[in-house]
Length: 166
Image 1 (cartoon, rainbow, N blue to C red):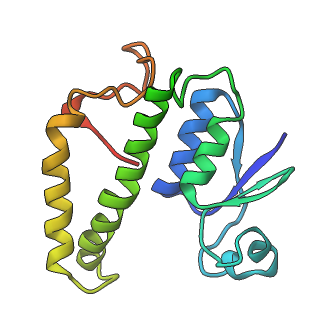
Image 2 (cartoon, helix red, strand yellow; image 1 turned 90 degrees about the horizontal axis):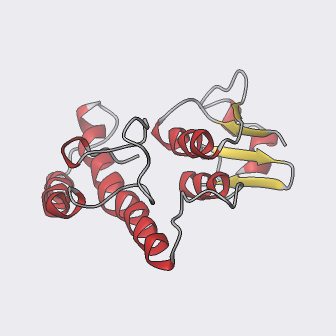
């Protein structure tokens, strides 16, 4: 089965690529993708009618939105434990995916993009991002970020002091 992700490499694409690496699924990057051009083509709009990236091309049909793509890829090998091995692990994993998307990513973009010249600065967004990170710090530092913790040599092991959200 060939899976092709249409986008330039970015943090949202990395979600699917990391999941693919973890479960042993091959995901290829679309060749010659150009943001602003490829994503406006009629072919791409069949994958995502909004023209947003990333979009995943599968034999069964397209999938868009980065978290949906990552979840799809992770579930292609049902024997893996990337989504946990119990209902509580599954719920906790989903909780952190949602927290990252709804609390961190949204506010981080509103905080970082103005500094890069892509958007207008919004002080409350900066405050929300910093507040969210500070509040979650004590909890996440004691929470395994992967189910059934991988071996210490795994590149997917995280420590509380170097926590990264995707």
